[in-house]
Amino acid sequence: MSDKSSNATANGCNHAMTKYFGLLALCCLVALCGFFVEAPAVAQGVGAPPGFRDCRDCPEMVVIPAGSFQMGSTDAEAERELAKVPPPQSLIVSIIGGITGTTDLDKAERFMAYEHPAHLVTIGKPFAIGKYSVTHGEFAAFVHETGHITAPCIFFGYLGHPVAPTRNAWEHPHFDQTDRDPVICVSWNDAQAYIAWLNSKVAVDKTIPSKGPYRLPTEAEWEYAARAGTRTSRYWGDDIGIGHALCAVCGGRPVPCADTLQFRGKIPPAGVKCFMAPVNQTLPGDSFAPNQFGLFDMLGNAANWTQDCWSPTYPSAPVVDDPTLRLNCPSRVQRGASWDTAAWVVRAATRGGLPVDSATNLAGFRVAKTLN
Image (cartoon, rainbow, N blue to C red; front, top):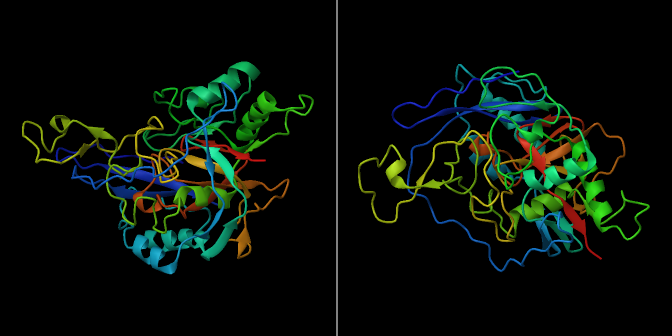
């Protein structure tokens, strides 16, 4: 499967093929990128505790307090976001995990049904979660020490032609990454191998290296951490805005206004911030402001694997912070959207699933930690 992204035109507007995941497949939708405009205020981390590391190679962690929240999306949120789904276009690849429908809006509506019903969830105990997604540099330390070979990676987005899945594509996913970019092209199984190695670094009993405090976050923990006490679709508000996250139509990172098409050769108005057109690759994890818990890139840049088995709807409600722990379930939940995802998908409630041995250039993971 492949998508073709159109080239940027002279008026500074780009078309981007956008994807997200459905059950055992990928959601591919087309969105239209906006002009450089003034950016709204960016929410800063409020009272976030300082991060900590358990070892030199361990990810930086942030403690998240216990609490309750409304998990999933409401009918009002679904109606608001579905109004933003672009009309059908000739380049669209309309596949959403076996979902059928006559229009892109119909498929998007069925995709959003994965987020229902909205229900109250209680996170009964504090836990820690990665301040960032596991970085390229952190994953490299694991691979160089263990020789681990990652699953074949499927490439989407910027290439415009099929690329045969390749192993160890995390090392160079067809674009340059810094050590601070989120690692991508890793499967759920690859994440588990990394976590086992990480636990061996801190395990009290070295004879049981697979047992330890580090793990993937549950789906409920992930959404609770992403919302960070907010009730809006995104931790900065209901609208996607510009300059809050990296996605296909989220504006990119700040650049000098003199370098943009809109203000080239002109003096921009006071207070205006300029942003790049869509960036067809990942960015370092600190390119945008954190949420109110002090966590970076909970939405956009790279989606995150979670611990839970995939189910197209929430299996029970209300739910208390226990994942659906079936040992041999074939697919697990991903959260958070990516650098190549449509803006309407970049929300705290968005969810999808992929097989545990699947890897794409859209997703990585962040770790959680059980606290004593």
